[in-house]
Length: 313
Image: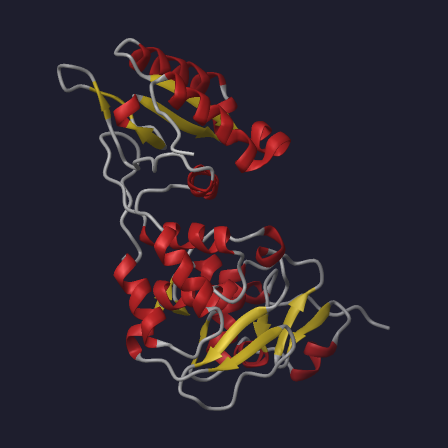
């Protein structure tokens, strides 16, 4: 059997539609050669070619009339953190927004729901559900803490004197409007609970889960986006969670804090606020792995108790 001829440069290393193949001057028979696999109806992918989600989503929405990416697919495109099992599941979630027949094809989880224009957006040229609608669709799929973390991601905004500022993708009121405007949707009770726990200012899932664990243990609610300043008004630190009344700052240090440069910066930060009477509590991924978020809260509790906080239990 003769080996198939090379594909044109425009089609190599990526998925493509049969229409794109014809437009490139390649015969229909070429689509059935052994170096290509059928990814979905009318779509071919060279064996071994890794496909970015955005490319696959762009291609499938293009050949599926009046569809948008929804649910976990839309969440990933909005860079919303998800549990690994959901993030790595192989299906692409598509929604037919005009109420017509749901998309049915290999590799696609299809739905049909009538959506207003306000609930449809684009990310990098890919049609997707809006941030608020995407979050609501996750309510039936995520445990409560992860749903709160997703809400925190969508509503987070930061304006700092260092690093990158961050604009919110939507507001808490946008999320609430979605919940109230869709009374029959699955996961609505979960969404309502999450709305009560969501806060503006959390930068990561661990920060959110640490804050929620603090609440479950009956500690005071920490402030987000608090700036520790010296007597001259100079900014010394932006802790992830702060208890200004007790001068306790809590930080979750992820893997990027393991570099020598970051370690030195963290030491200077902690020393600078210690000089004005603040206590720093650092929680690491290793702590969480050993004791869980609820377990590491005892370190925050001990710091607050030393600073004068008295439990009401």
